[in-house]
Length: 228
Image (cartoon, rainbow, N blue to C red; front, side):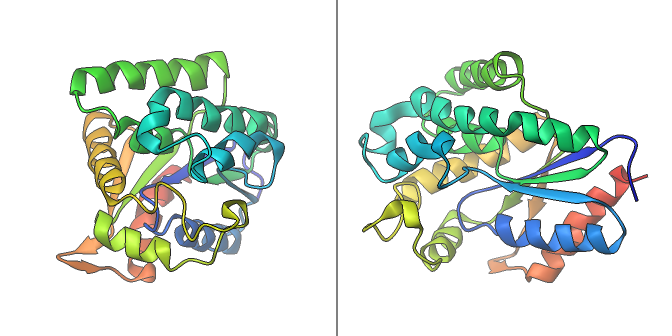
């Protein structure tokens, strides 16, 4: 089934929230429904465009706080810009494009470094201008935030297989810093509340993590409305 207009779906949330898993589940579901689907992961580890991101996450430029939100955001934004032409072509071809992380990843992880809400607002406006106006990358049609409590998300993230870009480190500077993850969790909830085009998927039932299948059903219920 070729769509007349492509659809761009983004998954975001703290490290360990299940973005990669839900991306794969949604790709499979959409393909079973007859849709043409393309998947992309950010950062694009191993590519030249992600080199600054990799060095940052290894701690090569200092701690996350020392690098700050603005410089770190530029690292990630350049990587998205590098993929922009490819994504735009997929969408012109009428495909459904699913991204594991996108601009909201900067908003959550980097915005969490800014304590004052008024200063965060300025940062969000700066980021929007950088990504969507200067770099002119595609805007998502569906922007989903998977919410898992930071403590649980960190444990899940640290169980993952070692990433090649980390070399000798067991985890990156975001995954190792629970305070950073808690701040990011808070900001993800904040932006979902303040921006109607960002949809929060609650992956917790009380103190327990919901099953992958149950979360997938919540995701599908959001996505299917856009497929008509």
